[in-house]
Image (tube, rainbow, N blue to C red; front, side):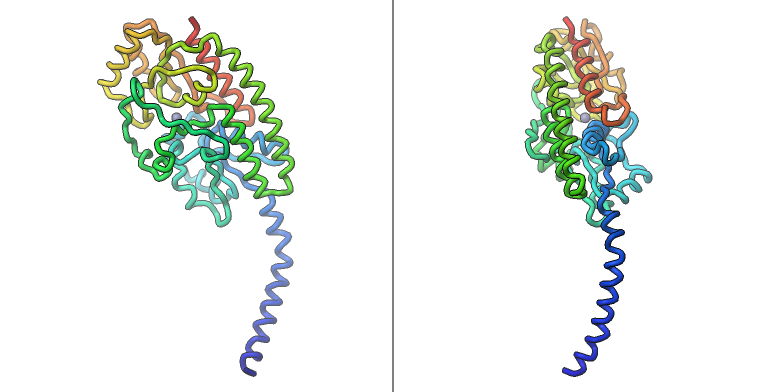
Length: 321
Ligand SMILES: [Zn+2]
């Protein structure tokens, strides 16, 4: 008994010393943890996060330039961003296969937030049948996340109503990291939602005249936008942008465009326009570039609204009677 008391004394002195050291360090580590270091994957999502953080901080962007989230690979500079992040926002692993590795690279206590699963978002299944058939199974489709989502279409950000739910989820996630900014995040998200609702109304009015006009997409990315604004694609050239469309598929699409009243066939900045020329051969269909991932638009808080405007403009011009 005596020995145990004697050995406990130095231990208690040590723990008191340790407590004193920790007490000195605590304010520093608390201050460091208080300002979240935020990273977002794609430009439209980065824009929404930037809007919520306005006046408080700025998020870092991973998929910049004209890169596609479906084919992006993390560079060493991206790995460094992730290694210092406290919060990483992504859409989903199925849409952004490169994010599969992020969770393992995050520092202890940092979080990866998947906006696809944000409260309120109604996911749509990937389109199949008609010109959406030939559901090719690409590499990223075997991911856990894709299976969990049952083949859902990951391009949820293209419905501004979903973006409003994402703004709420972003504000909540940030508030967990920095409760002292919670009110600012909340106010920013609410203001962004008001602006977004007004923009949605004006775009709906702009697109009403071309509702029901037929078009072919390059990759099946825009059904969330279509549903919101009364549009409906007749098909897509490829269901998986990683895999080039087969010759058989292209001739089937060309026949469809030639015989039915397809007004427009869209290409995309990331993918070669040659196949679009093949598909529109012998028809009166127009062609235009559609940029559902915002590849051609600069990043920043304005990016999201600019993306919706650019999409509306492309549809309106290419589908005009
Ligand atoms: Zn896509």
